[in-house]
Image (cartoon, rainbow over all chains, first blue to last red; front, side, top):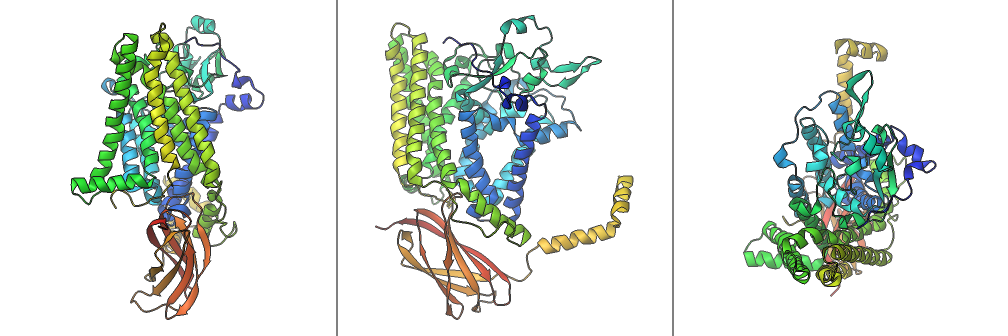
Length: 478
Length: 139
C-alpha cells in the first residue's frame, strides 16, 4: 500500500476551517451533546416510561446511534470530538488532577472488548431500547465510569482502553473520509518539542501545559490512520508549526496499511484489535438479528433444548454461536485457505486479513441504525411536544404531531441494500489490496477466501433485512 | 460557603427556611397525586393482528374496582421500539358503566403499547398504558 500525499486540507477551507481551528470549537460541540445527554437523563428518569414517547429512548436509540454512524462515514469521529463525558471529566480534573498511569498490563483493548460485548448482551437481554429509565442510567453510568477512571489515571485512559462506544467509533473511523495527519514530514523531523503529543507549554512556566497534546498517545509524525483518534484537534491546537492537516483521503485504505502505528503498533501483532474487529463485524449481525422473528423462534427452541423458561441461556448460546463459533469457523477457515494459497502461515493471514471485514461490518451497522434514523427521524418532534406537556403541563409547542415519523420502511430498504453492497465492495477491495502485498505472485487465490467470507456474510445480512422486522420489547428475561 | 450563601440570600431576599419551603413545595408540585391511579383492563376482539381491525373493550375502574364512567379519553398505540409510526388519536366511545370501546388497526408485527389518556369526571388526569405483545400478521 502506498500512502498518497494528503488531499485537501479541511482546516484551510473557508468558514469550516476557522470554525474548526477556533480553540473552543470542541467545547461548543461538547456542550451541545451535554445538553442532549441532560435531556436523555432527565426525561428518562422523570418522564413517561413509554419508550416511543420518551426523549431518553428516542434520542439515544433512534437519533444518536444513527447520526453517530452517519457522521463517522460522512465526516469522521465527530461524536468522540463532542463527547460530553470528557467535558465533565475535564471540568472535574480542574479540581483533581490524576497522578497514576494506566496499568501496563491493561494497555490493550481487552477491557473495552469485554464491555462492548457486555453492552450488546445487556441491550438484548433487557431490551434497553424500550426502557427510558434504564437508558438514562446507562448514560449516567458512562459519565460515572469516565470520571472514575480518568480522575485516577492520567491521559485518555477511559477513551483508549475502556469506552465501548469509543472502540466502535475508532474502528468505523477507519472508513472516514478525513484524517488528521502531518502536512510536511520535514517540519516534524526538525521539531524538537513534540508539542503534538507532549502538549504546548507556557514559555514563562515550562511545567505548565497551555495546550494539551494527544491524550491517546498518538505521535503525529508516526500516526497512521484514524484508529484511536478522537478527532479532538488537540494536536492541531498544540502544534507550534501549524503542520497538521485534517486531510481528505480514500476511506478504508488504512485497513491494508502494514506500517507500525504510533500508540498502536502493527495491526498484525494485535490480537486484541483483531478480536475487536471480529466482534465489530459479527456484533453488527447479532444486533440486527435481535429484531427479526426467526431468531425469536430459535431462542424458544434453544430454551426448549436446555429445558429452561429463562431466555438468558438461550441468548448466551446465540452470542456464543454468532460471536465465537461462526467467526472461528469462517475466519479460521479463510485464514487457513488463504495461507495455503500463498504458502504462508494461517496465523499471519488471520491477523492481517481479519480487518478486511470491517467495511462490511460498518455497512451492516449503517444499514441497521440508518433504518431507525430514517424511519424515525421526525419522531423527536412529537416526543418533544409531549415532553413539554409532561413537564410544563401545557402544550407550549402544540399538541404532539404523532403522524410525524420519517421515511416509509419500504423506501429505506434500497438504501440499506446499497450500504451493504458498499461495505462488501470495500471489504473485497481491502482483501485484494492485502493479498497483493502478502502474495504478490498470486493475489487472487490469497484474497478469494476473504472475498468468499464477505459474500457469505452479505447473503446472511440481505436475508436478515428481507425479513419483516418485529419490534420486540420483551427481552430474553421475558 | 457561609459568605456565598449570605450573599445569595441578600440578593434574593430569601431565608434558608423559605428556600427549603419553596423546595418542598416544588417537590410536592412535581410529585404525583397521592390518590391511587385508575385501573385499566382491555379485552381484544378479535385478537390483535397486523392490518386487521380489533375492537378494544376497555374497562376503567377506580382503586376499589368500582367502574369509572364519564371519562373523556383518547387512545394511542405505539410500537414498543421508539421511532416507529404510532396509530394515534383514536376515538374512545363510552359504553356505560365504566366501559369504553376503541377500534385499533395495528400496522406492524411486534410488541405494542396502548396508551389511554384523558380526564376523569372529577378532572383528574388519566394516563394509563398496557402492553400488547406479539402482534403477528393475519394467518
